Amino acid sequence: MTARTSARPETPRPAQAAPAPAAPRRRRSRAAGTWYFLLPALALYAFAVLIPSARGIGFAFTDWNGLDLSWNFVGLDNFTRVLDDDQAIRAVRNTLALAVVITVVENLIGLLLALGVHSKIKSRNVLRLIFFAPVVVVSVVIAFLWQFIYTPGGPLTQLFEGIGLGALAQNWLGDPSIALWAIAFVVIWQFAGYSMVIFLAGLQGVPKELLEAGAIDGAGPVRRFWSIVRPLLGPAITVNVMLSMIRGLMIFDQIWVMTQGGPAQSTDSLSTLVYRNAFQYGEFGYSTALAVVLALFVAVISIVQYRMLSRREKK
Amino acid sequence: MDRYTWRTGVREAVMIATAIVFAFPLYILVNMALKPAGDTSSALSPATAPTLANFQEAWQRAGLGGAITNSAIVTVVSVTIIVVVSAAAAYPIARATARWSTAAFYTFMVGLLLPLQLALIPLYQTMRDLGLLGTLTPLIVLYCGLRVPFSIFLYVQFLRLIPEDYEEAASIDGCSPLQTFRRVVFPLLRPVTGTVIILNGLFVWNDFLSPLLYLSGSANQTVPVAIYGFVGQYASEWELVFAALIIGALPVLIAYFFLQRSLIQGFASGVKG
Image 1 (cartoon, rainbow over the protein chains, first blue to last red):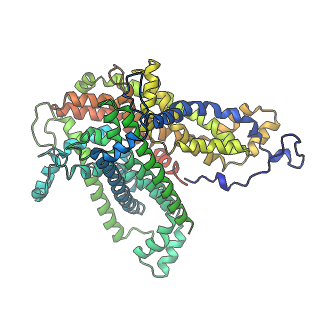
Image 2 (spheres, chains in turn red, blue):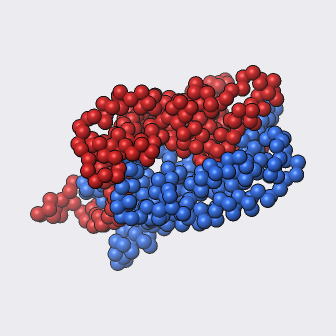
Image 3 (cartoon, rainbow over the protein chains, first blue to last red):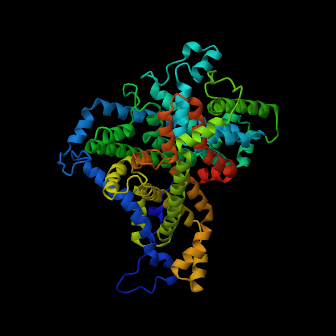
């Protein structure tokens, strides 16, 4: 995920009035006259994303209810309301907690799976196939499946009882203090294979000779991983952390299917709150303000993270 | 360190055990779908009299045939448009050195940071005013706009690695820019086009939030929405619910099974820096 445009040396542009013969024709790309190739993509992107997003930011300063033709400009009221709204504060907290937990745990598990599969074991292809399978399954299906697994007295509880840990079984999705983590667990289960695949691609880039040299020099497996493999996994870590963080911040499907934000709003995320405010309470203005807050979180966190991780990569 | 030693054997055993635990939910999914109606045995115990009747029943009652057709139409049309317009847009961005091409690149990259939720509601209003709610058109337009930035990003990165020589040869031979792009550049992009198709296809097929909004109240449904509606209606008949869940997951799983190598590669390479 590197945007190297800025690093590209600026070729001197010949002045418009007097085409400088010094800049040889060959060096000016032939693609320069193809600016119109951009138009279809730009039109779709502007119509479906840029303009609606700009209007969304505009709506965030109004009291529009989504139906009436009239609306009033209310300044920052919607945003100050976010700060006063316990439900919104809780959704922000939940969203951040989900994003952090999902990012950390999913990547740790993904890395362990990758290290396990990336070896001489005979079943590695089958194992890879299994671990990655949930990634391609519709999230709604996964969420319903786990909702059933989590039912009180359901498969998970039975499994706990079966191994003599029945006392630890919970009302997984019904207990406000546990439900959020139960949902995080599902997302981690679903996407650990995704992290694994990206780590595997990174591991394939680690030269065998380096590892052999390390082994000859007496470095054990742990030492070899920490000193040789880990530094080379930089790009894979950057990509994985970005992907799982954004997935965590924007999470909707799994929550909406399993709990609809309940019990007692304990699993509301910004996405579910945006949806509920817009389409169940008819508060489009307030809802778009919440969407703007979400957009800010996504933008700020991705940019900060990208800078931090790419700087570390360079070291 | 390349030999299969007892350590490798231990590692293999540990990984297989992990995979079994990992696949436990999938076992529940299949097992429940095979149980005949009214079977109240535990979800853990294997179906004693497995039946396929649930699938037929779920297929008819959930209207999954129509939903799969709709999902297929939306996916194929969106992905085709995304591939064509993104590849075309990436060409001048990667090749032209003028300032507008850098500006265009950053304009598209802003789209990577805008969450779907922000555009969704205003676009909903526009589509309502155009009378397009309940049809597949808003979904296709939305997916195209939404996925173009990421696809352009992939194409640009790939294009920068391809030397310009082929294009120059083509244009010396008298090809117009459009011909050069169609006959020379686009075929060279094949590997990354595969990645673009896979990542976008899966995104579009699995998306739940947008069709939930844009198709609500209409007879048109996509697979995730049809399943969502069906489970809400038949929540007590678990064997039907599970059959429907499997049918919903199956088209992609079948594709996954046959294309696993390129699919996994697509996921991994699509995001390599």
